[in-house]
Amino acid sequence: MNSRLVCLCTAVLLLVPASSVLATNGMNLEGYGPIATGMGGASFAFDNGSAAVMNNPATLSLMPAGFRLDLAVGMLGPDVTATLEMPGMQMTANSSADAFFMPALGLVRKQGNMAYGLGVFGQGGMGTEYSKTSWLADPSQGSNTALTEGLVNRSEVSVGRAIGTFAYQASPQFHIGATVDFVWAGMDLQMAMSEPQFQDLANPQAQTIGEASGTLVSAFGQMYEPFGGTGISRLYHAYFDFSNDNDFTGEAMGIGLAGKIGVVYEATPDVTLGAVYQSQTALGDLESDNAALAMAVNVDPGIFQGAPTGNYSDMNIPLTGKIVIKDFEWPSIFGAGFAYLPMPDLMLAADVKQIMWSQVMEDFTMNFVVDNTAQNGGFANLEMDATLFQNWEDQTVVAAGAAYKPTSPLTLRAGFNYGKNPVPDEFLNALFPAIVESHATVGAGYDFGQGSQVNASVQMALDKDATNPGNGSTMPPVTSGHSQLSWMLMYSHSF
Image 1 (tube, rainbow, N blue to C red):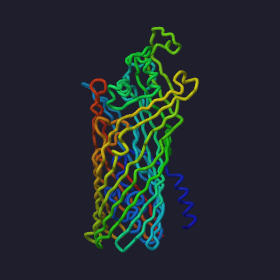
Image 2 (cartoon, rainbow, N blue to C red; image 1 turned 30 degrees about the vertical axis):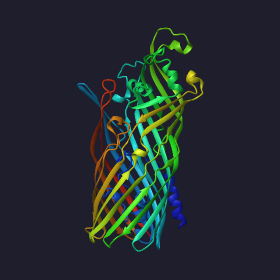
Image 3 (cartoon, one colour; image 1 turned 120 degrees about the horizontal axis):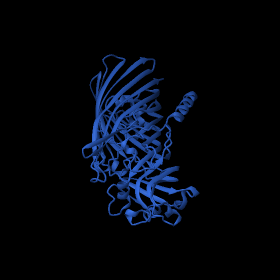
Image 4 (cartoon, helix red, strand yellow; image 1 turned 180 degrees about the vertical axis):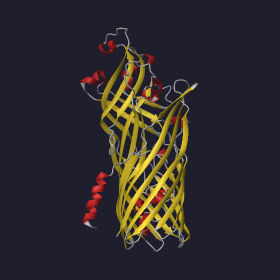
């Protein structure tokens, strides 16, 4: 391989982040590369460039002999709202996280019956941000006098892959390919929980949205009067905060491995079949030593000196420590598809795939350990396990599209993608609204000759609403709305 190409790939690899994006098929992008996304994400049975390392690696052996370099950038533009449904009143918050940019790189070579190369792509994720003035910014809805400004509620989950791949044409009709994926994941979270939510988590007789346990919960319960303790009459909110506002990495990070295997069969000169299996990741826990948990309370300050005064005031108890997101993984995926040429200038393609969210999104579990520092007082070294139930369903995704060449250098594409919302309404969280279902896509490619080509696509996720019904008056219903307008652009050079 040319040494200058190796240097170029290394430089781009170092610059490609695990981009934080908002989900389309659950937390997965609806497709990878503008050739596939222009056709609704269909990609399992035809040559779609180096994006094959994310789609079906066996399709690499369908490419012409030589090198192919793909440099791409995409923008995903979500429009997300969260509406609190109160009797006779609604309050709507708009997420300001409305543009996520995603670079990607691929360099592959076809030589004889073999094809090999590498690629770096953002896999997917989620992200929202609600401002200090939104209704989520104060769970006590104004009763906390110690809260001088609202709380940002923010989430970013990002997963990226650096992928090595190999494909082999075993016979004139049969092709096989595989990848080894180095996976990295990051997470930022700023989340305020209300008193009813905390009571649900910490009360073993409730626990409809999740559960909380540990020495920190026990110590707090001994002071929390609704649980029979002494000294704290009310919890206005509990605020989890680990966030670095960095476009390249999340505050809590983890790395691991995964892989894919795919096949392609050229059934006739006009019909090609493809299938692929992507393994579940083997990621380490996401961890950060720079986390905080703030508890806003109405408290008798004397309890901290062992001498209650009977005089209560609002105050904030800030704790610092280490956060661990346990067992965060990306699911296994398997699927199959076809490509059909009814005429030389027209290709029709369709894929069906199953994303096994139920294997990895049963719950979301955090472990927080308080630092052993003087500022954390009597809470030092205590810990809490907090779990939010998720119970996502497996998702069947159908992608279909067409590519038409009206002239030799120009290709026009269109497609559709559908995957039923995998998130149960009762566990829907406004910070993680991975609910969109239907996508309409268009795209185009132009061959400038001498190995230079440009491809682009535009994807529109149609508006989808879903409502968490809440729990009566203590946790009122919240409706999340989500739509997207996104694009991808890729320059390719073959030589």
